[in-house]
Length: 201
Image (tube, rainbow, N blue to C red):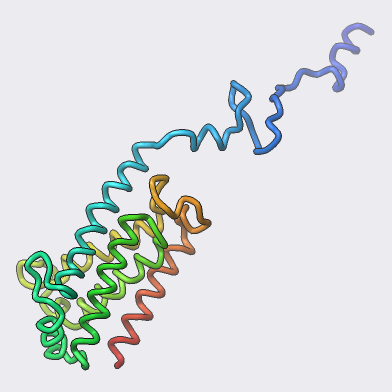
């Protein structure tokens, strides 16, 4: 009985042992920090996000360059300004420049994964304006001049802000680079506010 009581004493109970790593909250079987192991390699999700960001961001940047500089067969700033003036944006050339810069800088920001929530906000603001003044009256589908295209851009920009740009991005070194509710709220809120101010002028 004495032997049995001694072996079952709490002080002698067997507990799992982890080797210390100096920092972190846990270790894997090799004794390495779990956080280091989790971020040691680029994942398929990181590559997928990079593909989305590059394709979407660079096309949006080129779309803005069409307005600003007449590149890629675009109309250029003067002609775009006349179109904006016809929609009620005056001075038309100023608002055309704001739109073109928002698309170009927002697109480049997403492509690089740089200031991602701000880049997303720039694109969201432009698209809200487009839906309010041009496409909203024509229903959903782009074939009828509807909001399909603008909705897709808005949702992708917001989703990247929420998910984060991934490991293959400049923002990986900053706090907002992980995405999250605050980043998504910032992008949607700032984009909506900018659009509301522009529409009220």
